[in-house]
Amino acid sequence: MGRRQPTFVVRRSSIQGKGVFASRRIHPGTRIIEYKGERVSSEEADRRYDDDHMERHHTFLFTVDDHILIDAAVDGNEARFINHSCDPNCEAVLEDGRVYIEAIKNIQPGIELTYDYHYEREGPYEKGWAELYACHCGAENCRGTILDKPRPPTRRSRRRKKPRR
Image (cartoon, rainbow, N blue to C red; front, side, top):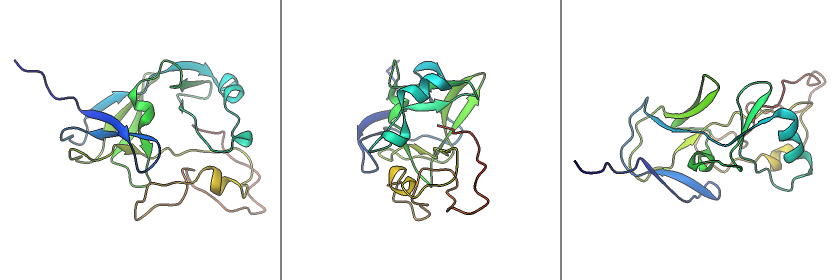
């Protein structure tokens, strides 16, 4: 029996930095890869990555629950290079405290794998977030940000959910 061609390759992306690209056809429902890395507390993640003091938002964090995040910058795998898109072809699936990336569309060879980060920030919307969390996916329905549901500042925007990375 011959070896099966790998599902994906990592190479330069037009969205941002490196990206993950299908090297063969991937069907909807296919579990592509587990998101791996060091499991850290939310306090440790906040200590390592302070969004408010970064020039450019860049972390490899993924929230598992209210207390645990995966930091793929430490012992991470290729899943950390899957970029955000407002019109994704994959989704992140949480199962038994683990995170998997699964296809939600037919993906042809050469197409970049993407999922919607649904990034959330705590506190009232700040003007600088538009630039800090800018999206470069190029989708027709691009919302312009990796933030889940960006809301311009209002008087009622004082209460927010906890950040989800």
